[in-house]
Length: 196
Image 1: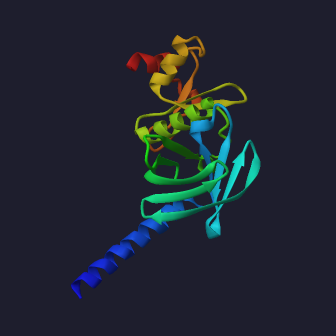
Image 2: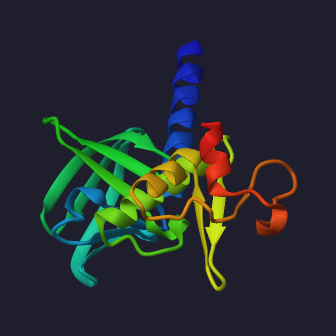
Image 3: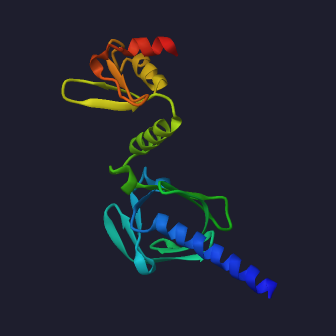
């Protein structure tokens, strides 16, 4: 009787992990980073284990997926049938390890980003923004009369000035603290660089 309840508890925990994995994957547009330089591949995990695979915007036919175990995903796509270990999953990124070899596939959630991810530069911008917003340090914005740029860390501002892509006399505003500063508060990029 004790083993029955232990097995039941393990099965319930497994079902929760599967449901959690599916809730993170489903109805989001995932871009495959491994191929972004040569082609854009998007995956959308739909209800009823239906998988939409779009290569350069064209839907491939007949894809499907299933959770084979709490940490394995079976993908049937245009290039074949794959068993992948879910190495890492969050609402923003999934890393799959291909069973039987050392290759990994990395998917980024384009839906959460709110912009299209088409190039390596887009991917770098995506990760820079994520790291800045999670870093806990101050983030800075600079602007022109009709446009605002950022967020940037102090190091990124220093690099932009060093590479002559940004004038050190520009005013910045920061998002530190409860109340964001305004451009007219008098903080210049050169003042921030001096503090580094």
